[in-house]
Image 1 (tube, rainbow, N blue to C red):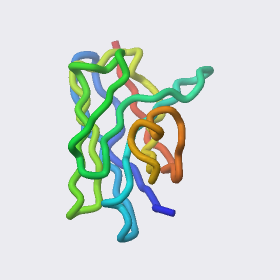
Image 2 (tube, rainbow, N blue to C red; image 1 turned 90 degrees about the vertical axis):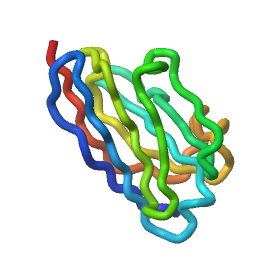
Image 3 (cartoon, rainbow, N blue to C red; image 1 turned 180 degrees about the vertical axis):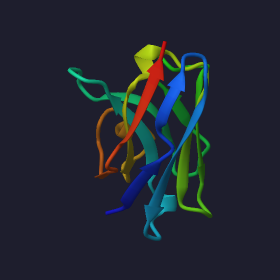
Image 4 (cartoon, rainbow, N blue to C red; image 1 turned 30 degrees about the vertical axis):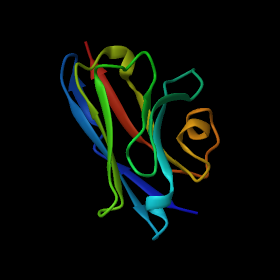
Length: 124
């Protein structure tokens, strides 16, 4: 399994930006699709974005399209989530996820490893 550690969460005003990072251990990072999910209080965990192992394919939830960008640096074993134009409804714990069955299955919940999560709070 891949070990994942998120960072970059915090408190930001509506309309602001944050960049989340997820550092992965293990030499198999480059063979894993990577993604971000989030969970707000009282709600189920939901898909946010995924990126294929090569970085050539991306998929986003409709709620974040045009505002969030997922990227990865396989040389640094790190995946990023750039979040712009943040809204109060983006407030949640954000989790990094890895899967070795492809980005499509990762997006649908086929998760191999989870990070511990990082809190994002957007004040209105």
